[in-house]
Each structure stands twice: as C-alpha cells, then as structure tokens.
Image (cartoon, rainbow, N blue to C red; front, side, top):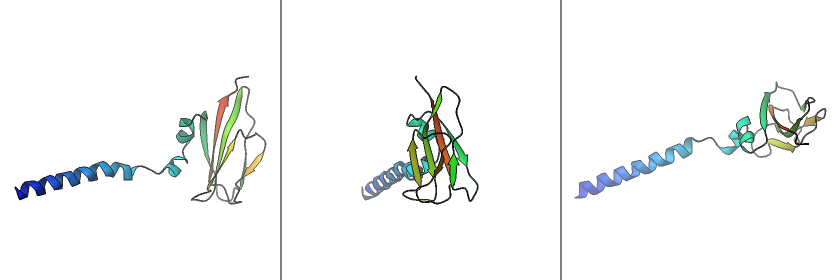
Length: 116
C-alpha cells in the first residue's frame, strides 16, 4: 500500500511539472513586442520591422501613397522598462528619436488603409 501511494505521488508530481514546463518556455510579452505579429494581432494593420545599424538615433518614415496611412511607430532602444517608445498615428517626413536619446536597434511601423 505504501508503495502505491509513493508511486501515485511521483506520477502526480511529474504531471504538474509537465503542465508547468510549457509556461516557462513561452517567451515573455516584452520579447513578443519586438515582432510585427504582436502589433498586427492588436489591430494596428500591416506591420514591418526595420533593423538598424549601430549609431542610428533617429528614423524618418517615408511618404505613403493614398489611401495608406501610418497607424503606429515603435522605436526600440536599449532594454528593460522604457525600451520602447510607441507613437500612435506618426507622420511621414518627421525624424523620430527615442525619449532616452539612445541609439535605435530597430523600429516597427504599421500601416492601415484610410476610410475617407
């Protein structure tokens, strides 16, 4: 009887570990924010990522053709809290810099089709 209880406890503990393992393997949300799919899933339209070389501290969005418009610009500089500046409805032709003044590692911009 004692062996059956120990065996059941062992099986139960392995089951708990198996359930917990996928949660630990999942990437944190901050890492997901570095991907276009994250912003597209939130409804910001079609998104593109531009990796930037070292030393770039600003980014200027080019003009878009009608009927497209920018819905979002994410400026990534550094790591941790405050690494991303999120700008809603950014304008083309404006040089955007990160609020920390750090160099940009990448940007993500999203576009949508204007309704009017």
